[in-house]
Amino acid sequence: MVNKVIIVGNVGSEPEVRSLDGGRKVTTLRIATSETYVDKFGEKQERTEWHNVVLWNALAEVVEKYVHKGSQLFIEGSLRTRKYEVAGEERWTTEILADNIKLLGRAKD
Image (cartoon, rainbow, N blue to C red; front, side, top):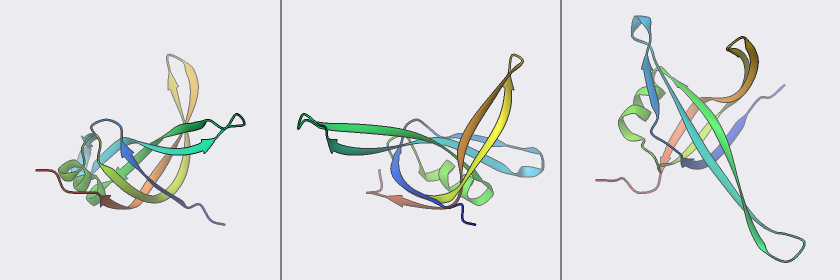
């Protein structure tokens, strides 16, 4: 079985970095991917999809140093769905657990 995701997109907000017990770091960020298509009326349309991405340890540190809102990234990883609770209500979220990233575009000053 294969659980592999590859996306190229733009970071939607500043990455959220947390340090855990034992010095481990985890970073979460939102990536937007967009596609354009022509609808049945011949009009050009754009659809944007938002992805939650989780990065651990060394990858989290790279993102903390070099990635900001608007950065373009190549993300490779796997899908993970998990359950959590808010005010007693059960909710689900699907995330990309990144195992490889590449910073794309020009470096900013």
